[in-house]
Length: 391
Ligand code: ADP
Ligand code: MG
Image 1: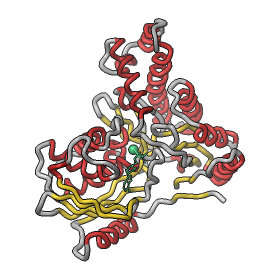
Image 2: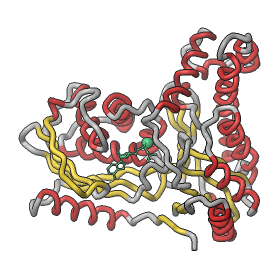
Image 3: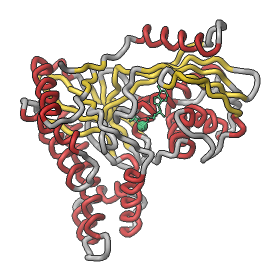
Image 4: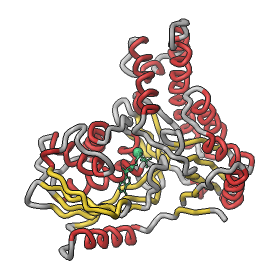
């Protein structure tokens, strides 16, 4: 029996957030309910903090924030994810290193908007969500961005989606302490349905690229491996630090610059392979980033040409590179990808930061159940906790 994690429709999500608000704060209703989606990244992994390209699509799964402003400077926060308590804190006390746990993502957004000089007083907020948490589907950004939209609306802040994206990135980096690169918040605030978001992380420009697998008889299967994934640990930060070190050695602000001139990538890799301590690791990390940026370009060119059926080898190559050169895969992700391919997927890869989380597989629409069954069976055969399929 496979497990499916279905999205709520938006009316259900809003009703649930209102009910959570009433349970936490009593009968006076919230000013409204705002929401933001989780995402899967089609391709372009670990490129955002290198000024590169990525290509997320929004999930139907969203996080809902029911919010009401207060006249004082207190934030009271409740989430169905943590039903034990309402957490209350003074906004003036929020600073890097002062807030632990999930409320850092909420209070961090208020802090970040206040850092811009905006007038953001206290609030009561209740959260409900059908985005799987900690599954590499960006529940953290969906949470931040739903709160940012709510605060922007109730206080008439008039911030653009781009400005709110930047504020949420700051909240995650500085208050929640996760050094993520910005793709997730852009996906939560700047994607539109039926399109992938080609995000250029060098200048934060975007292009909406039509993405409609069903129109080509295909489906994107999202596999939450349920293997533990935590970005607030050392591995993600270590990858980021190695990239920054390599860029400094090569005298460029970000690795992206190396892709600007023809042959630039090859020259950079040759320069890095100087036999010095750590050179081998630097070469492999940089090789992944540069090749992955190129794969995003090729993927988008295929989408533009109406050739979604031909992207499979790019998905496969991305996974191999993340597994062998970037070393951010894990057994569960590899099992999911290999089982999906063996069951007929056109291509498959891990998605998100890695070390657990989710994988995606591009499959024939009429083969979704068969591929899901095969992946589920492979997990059971290997003694792994069965995955959940996100639809
Ligand atoms: P991902 O973003 O891939 O789901 P992260 O580790 O980046 O994983 O973020 C997960 C964290 O975000 C959770 O541990 C929790 O602190 C917070 N979070 C996400 N969704 C919710 C929610 N609905 N309620 C409370 N906290 C949440
Ligand atoms: Mg996250």
